[in-house]
Image (cartoon, rainbow, N blue to C red; front, side):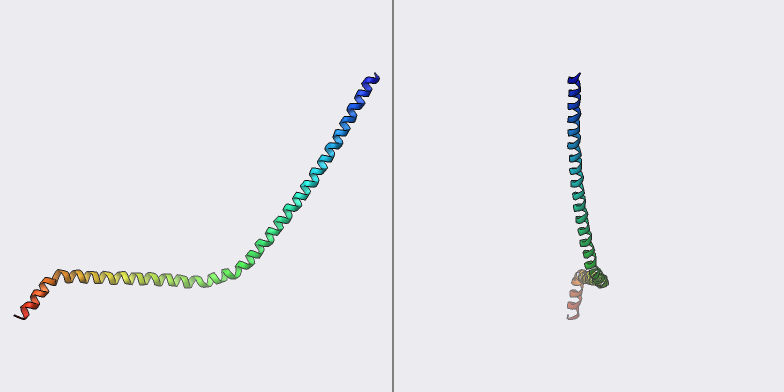
Length: 116
């Protein structure tokens, strides 16, 4: 019987040692995760501050863009008007050239007939 009790005591001692080891491991994991959590929180706060700074820097730029937008739109409209006028002028000159080329022979013959 003493052998069995000794063995049971030894097994219980081993279990106690393993539980202590596991408790230490759990404590280490908790400390490590708490450190990582704090590290992540610090990084997020840093990112939040940087985003806030970017937003503050962008506000004047947004006002400037809002001021310039109608001017740029006006330039675009003017550019399209100029392009349209150029296309219309080119079409008119082409039509006149075509008409002149159609009647060029008749006009030259008529002019020569005036001098005979």
